[in-house]
Image 1 (cartoon, rainbow, N blue to C red):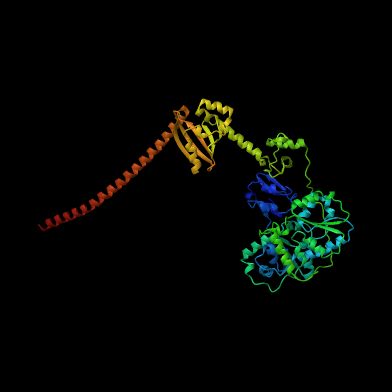
Image 2 (image 1 turned 90 degrees about the vertical axis):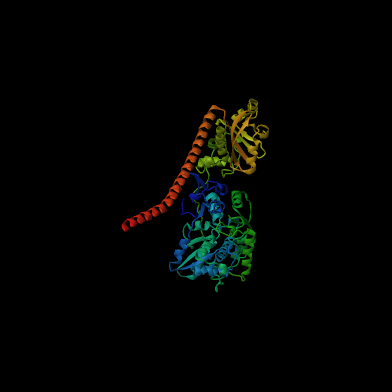
Length: 583
């Protein structure tokens, strides 16, 4: 567990369910000692694992204390508020939210969308200067991570321009011209990763979830506050507010450029982005093509740092309504450079294994041939071959294979079932036999043993036609009780039956023991003797208690009788003494 990373695993919470493995788009999860930990070198910090983990074991690094220290430093602190805020804080007006942020102690409240407008202008200028080629937006940090780690061949296609968050931080520092800290609030976890690199214009990146929790801790309810007298500073944003929805960046660029010979396409969701990057070299275009790629399906409004679960459609409409309500045509940006460089990060290209090597790995889980590869996905990997590669990479363990574990469990159950000397029969809700052992068949008849050899386990046989005590099974299936114990006589055999529930109202299991067998006789004699001794001891204790109570009562009664007698005797003695004196 590395708490310094933007996302880490709380091992004590991990349920070993492999859901994060199944859902992770780049399989940046390593199973070790029954815990699923994140491999930071492979992670693109899309945050999807934090959304799907049922036990909240995937945890976002908490940087709120860093922001608190900035507020206590005595230096002015500005807020860079991502434009998707209208989709989460939809129960209050923007001016009420500004007032709530001021009550936390922030000096300036500004929209990240101003930085987005600056990025749009610089991107438009960059595209104008190009003759042809494919260009990928660099606004989404998860997409940038994806290209750097998994598709370094496309690094040169990333537009070499700062993200809106960084551009906004640079803008605020240039505008106020005084010592200033900047705290970003948004829907994205990867923004934290973006700040873990080199030079930054933002001090700390927090999520909308962080902000909501911070408000709760301070007892601040934005929807109940009066609206702030001052709005967003230094001014309200306009087309930059479209950035958190599909095609929002393209809309901003189109308002900033005269480019007419370029194509623009927008895609959201990791699968779409990965598919495009994988086949990008196959694309043949004589023109300029700009691709706006967003890792989150539906855009930033559905980012992992959001708390409002409204559909992307609803949030998209809220973003559009907020943006179009900002009247005016604003061009608030500085004629300064926003260039950035992209480097290939730690090589994460998967090792290519031969079929023999993969089969050798899969033999550990009983998959000896291609026919054994059922590709069920229970381990979290799409195919058995990918699971075999993960085994060789040390990212997976063989117990992750569901079919393997089922075989082990089934094998152990079969051994136990057939080694138990007592008769065992499992029955479903239709009173059909699911499984039984040979001992059960032997208890019935020699003919049933012959049938058992033809139909091992007597699967599908009607229990009502085999035994007279079938009502014990039907009764337990009906009531759903845990267990019923009975002694019955079946064909002159004295049987002890224990029927217990496996799946309530669905499956029950019966264990039948022949009390006439010498081993069972001695066992039951011992058990019955123990039971008799226990009951006798309880009886003796009860008698002793009653005798004790009776003795105490008798003693009390005698004392109560004796006391007045003694008093009367003293009076007689005194009288006799007085008489003697008179004489």
